[in-house]
Image (cartoon, rainbow over all chains, first blue to last red; front, side, top):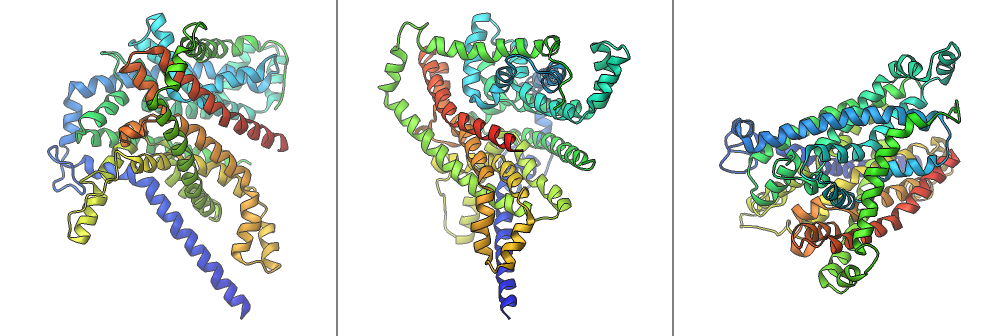
Length: 270
Length: 275
């Protein structure tokens, strides 16, 4: 009898926990989901649910110079950032995992600092510095700043990948006479593709979504999609933003699915 | 960690080291340099410390960060507890519900909240429809809008560390407590909560660090009276064109964040040491 009462109470608590959790899931997901139906609505009114469904907003987005230029710039910046940050992060991660050297902790702290420093402070600093170097309002300036900004993320992901590798293979290659560079190219890199891929993917998304630094560095010809969107939400609230939002959400969903798959992959061998 | 050599790291680490020296360290030096006009004056600090705009923004920043941090810890805990109780396979699937918002652009979320919370937004339309009266609750361009947007952004950040510490609890402890006759509420208070405290602390600190520097959410969902320090940096840079004062605000924000970030990092170091 007593056991029966306790079980009932336990189920009641479980129920309460589940109901609360579902409410929080809804709160978390609502903003990402709600933009989807709105984006298929009409261009003249912003309503939910839309009264008529159409592809008008996407048509406007893809045919308007004012949106296409920022989109292309964002894609260019994100591609360049992804490639450069991967090229820098792979050897750096290798050095951090496999070597001990003077000032290592300090250097790691410095590389990781954009994670902790508020992006507005980082953005102002880069803006002042780049004004001095005359790099504000240039694509190169954006790429350099973004590369620094995404480096902590790629470094963490690639380091985690290197930590799982068997160092004996690297020893072996070098004992057999391979130089460091050859060993990196033939032993480390081929095993590291999944981590490099994941790091690159995150770098791309983070650069593509980045607002604050791009906002400070933006010039008349270097307005990224996120900056254009930021000012559009502030000043015009045009329904086209819903179409852009849906495209961005789709991109996030792809990244998130790959994130989940990678987590599974790393869990299975262990 | 396998160390294969203590020499020869140079060429591997050099590009990252040069980049971070030039693009992470130098900008911070620029801010400190500018805030004191090259180390010659404290005018910028004197002028902001005497300005009511700055004092109000500081108060708003601290109030909003504490409250949003607290709310997101509560919401994050609810989700983490639910996830921790699922079988591994279902948990992986449910994680998508946290990861998708985590990876969704802050602009998308802020825009969505203007649709949800706006004057003719989803909530107001629904309430008007349900009550038959014309309801227009002020849910946006004020403190409520900022809190909703920030809590929404911070909650996933709290879920990850809390979930990790909940999963680290030995299930035998729960069984032992149950056999000894502890009620579910008692088990929660004496086993679950204390043992997940490190994760909660880590989550709360990172939420505080993130929220102190918030820029987008107050700019898009807040009113004029909800300006935070980050918005003030932008305001002085862009509208007033006073780089010294903007830098001074930046320095203060930097110091505020350091106060929270240093314990967070020490905590993380300690946890790794234990492992």
